Length: 527
Image: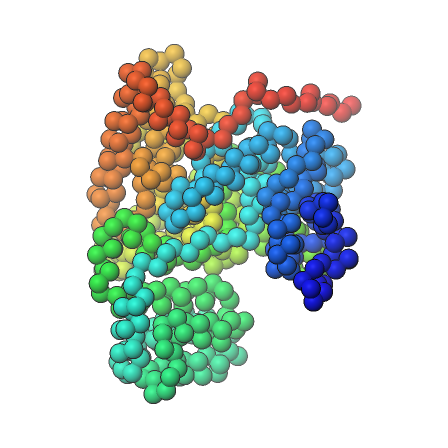
């Protein structure tokens, strides 16, 4: 598709409408390309890549064309009925999405606050806005946590271990997830696995695998295609574990909250999945909005582009492609495994499931203590075994309503995710005529910052080990104390510094429109 000079072919220029006068991609490409196809287009050439940094959105309800970050909002409001009715995002929704994109990308360091509170007033389309945000990052995985160990120290130890037959046991442990998968799901791959295991088992008398990375790359390249990516991720997690064991000098980092979180999240399965937690009463609403306004086949992993499975999973119901409306929700339906959940773009989970998973976690912890089982893994829910790309809590003000955090709130706060959003038209609640309304509202806001993992007024998650519960509570108290000293007390005393800091925090995390601030078209009533 490119000439030797690296320029676009006339066909590609015509298709993308990219030339010296118009460096934009036309939105009609979604009639021909899947989301996977457009991501592959980015490697064609630098000029094409630069042109794809912004794409044209020409379906805004105000009639104006806007440039938005690549890949735009594929599949959103593009169902046949939406196209027939001329549906599109409103100007205020595009403004919200611009602010949300900025909030997620201001600081991309591991553990940074990436997300916020979508607080548009009720009736302004928060659900569609959030679905558009999800569509804009479909296929992206969370950023890998930084390597918290000293690679030079590890490679020095590796030089010693690679000629030591005792190390064979550690190597075979790391290969166990691959062996287990093949034994159960792909017996035909056993001969290949055996060859790989024998070749990769020390001692090495030749120059093979001079570094741990070389060993990891060899196994990954050989087994790719024989086992799924989720199994390769489990193998890589095992490699991380023995890497950490080889670096004796950096173990002090494990006493650091960020270090603990890195270690925790490196042992979770990274997923491009968006977890949406909703009140039970809103599960039908979300499913209906997705069914009516998202062109599911754009995101489907099918060659012909016609399959719709594997995109949206509704807990207690099943795949949205086979769901019947109104939904017949079955709360007793078993939850999918973490490997199955990781294959979806969107997983919808009601609060009742969170309550059940938290109850199961507490019960298993008690059994673990009695039986002496490993507390770090045995008590985890499938929801806690994934490193989600994004977690969204609808009616998320419930996370901040209660001063004594509920078990459900603690469970949600324990979930690992790169990006986190609260959706609520009323982020703070209470009686506006009450004399302590403002004070209670500030307290609620701080508890939302706990979920969002604000670096100062929130907290990082060190894991789900109950042995660190008292430390977690101490950190929550420290975050609350800092909030009171810096924001709450000065603000209530009408000190300017309190107002300035509150404004700065709200500017950082809040995306909000009120109905009186925007000009919405009058509704059209069909006869």
